[in-house]
Image 1 (cartoon, rainbow, N blue to C red):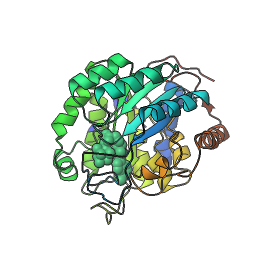
Image 2 (image 1 turned 45 degrees about the vertical axis):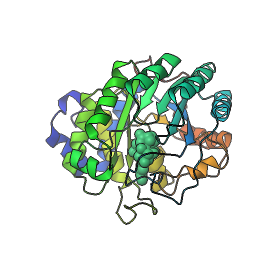
Image 3 (image 1 turned 90 degrees about the vertical axis):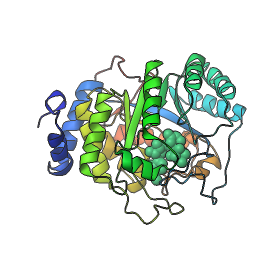
Length: 338
Ligand code: SAM
Ligand code: SF4
């Protein structure tokens, strides 16, 4: 099988997504992962600090038109203490994720970022589209990485699924983020209604083209309280195939085994770790908030505590002969080979 630099054309990608036997593709991606980023699995502690969102993405359970959601935003101190607990139990990266909630002004978020950076962790933001000056402020306050999926490169599909949003603007945000020196994470959903295999191949080439440091690829899972409730959703196999091809295209980036994969199959994230992934983002949000942050149904361990979640995931990682990353696990850091 041809890999990375040999596999530049769309037709080859489409073949890998459709006709190559799945296990053959997964084994190849696993090998490329092993050779390029080693056996360490980096854990990122995910804090879902607000489920309030000004947007109305048709696929998302947090969309503003979903009036059945009990909304919350965590107080600044609560976000900071959750991050401290995560750092105390060993997380070296904290990811702050939310809807697009402008309650968190630049000033408020910078205060949170500065406090969390004192815990000697890498900090990733996943808070959607903001102004260039906000992105600059967050970076100056110490944010290291930014994660924002492009979702799809099919602009017509994007505009149908994201009313009031603009694909070009999202793309420009990604370019600003990259220009400010953040490690850039992006990605897509697989199985969106109307999405074609060709457009998934374009998405992969796009992510290669903008040279992401991290690529999050997950299946679309219909949420019952959204306009897409009756859609079929993505399959685990197609999401894994897409992720595996991403590994072949960008051999040394960070690729998470996404939570949505585990929602489709109890071993979904472990399967992903054996098909090209090298990162897991366990949820470290505590208490009731965990259940209220429902992008899609079937979120794993929705009632669990951070320490127990971490334990279960660590056991699964060790069971497949992998180790937990010791450092912050950024892109382009030296790897420890076994
Ligand atoms: N609001 C920010 C944004 O949209 O970039 C960050 C949080 S948003 C909830 C994180 C990601 O969740 C989105 O980029 C999208 O890919 C994913 N997501 C939303 N609804 C989903 C669904 N029904 N199935 C799978 N993934 C979903
Ligand atoms: Fe808001 Fe993000 Fe959900 Fe869209 S995907 S509704 S921006 S939280």
